[in-house]
Length: 221
Image (tube, rainbow, N blue to C red):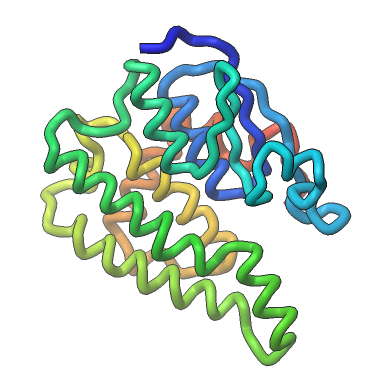
């Protein structure tokens, strides 16, 4: 295990991918420095050459640790889990780990990419007002949440979504995606299990600290 040395997170307060990593860091009780990267101001600071020298993809989050540059939220969260043993994000058994990864990846790979700012900007640039980007995002979020809800609903309690009765990797990904859904006016009442899990998480200190409105670069809604 690596000892706790300085962690630096390049983040944007409303980025759901950065939000995931903030939750993981706080669940593990790790101190970290936040470097804001504004994704909209002046065309987006992620496009600056200085930032591209850190992450050629021009995306957030980026985590710096012991001279290493880590990108992609799933990879960063698993790195944190391997380096810092406090509050494991994944179950100890192979099937449990596979199940949690599957749920998290359904958000990271199937829902989020179709709602990404880059995709919204491309749709607007190509087709302007002919495309309702809000309806587009709501459609794909509904598709993804419906599948996840079915996978969770066969359990006796929504808290069974947690491994060991504590939130982990899946919740790191779920809560930010629900935040996005609510931001764009989705009716989440049709997903009662997801809502119960998210409601419980939002009462926990780690999730409160990681919330967009509590970030140093947060802006008025």
